[in-house]
Image (cartoon, rainbow, N blue to C red; front, side, top):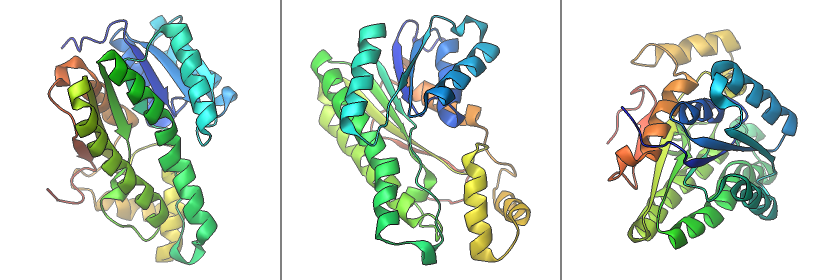
Length: 265
């Protein structure tokens, strides 16, 4: 299926690794131009090498922009640079930032603030200027990669889960606010996914349960009705579709991708 993304400018925050990088591959295969934004330039450069290794035609279709998205000025500077290079952003994929998994007894005020800075504001600082520019142009699509922890409270992910829940509300609210201006906003909630962050969560989970990380992994996998953990590419496939004109009447949706581990409507 042609997703009608040829020559569209896609900006991906957190695009240097994991789900963000997998999304970059998906958009490049659809003929889009991709701006990757991440805090660490070395990580971005490594991600670009991985893109070229996976998709030989990536050269010339990828631009790198290092920015600390916890700072609004840094986010706007990266956006300005990206649009100067590839033109107005047609699609924004927010996948930057991750709140640290923390056992309940280790939570304090600092941990709660850090979680919001790491996950909530890294999204808001890019979403806010992008959606306003899209609204002025009368078109655009945004997909926020959030996380299942905002739907179901986890003892090791309360601070990050609170940020996730807030982002779901923002996604639904912005979808309603900007629909008449031609901008669609959707969210994807991955569950366990085979990324580098998985190990951090396993360590915290193992501490709470008093078991080893390998056993924590086995228990987590056993709880999944599909019997396996998701790959970043599987999450990316949904993101690319939601961002495409083929999903033209989908907005305000929050898509669960947790392998049916938590049956809910």
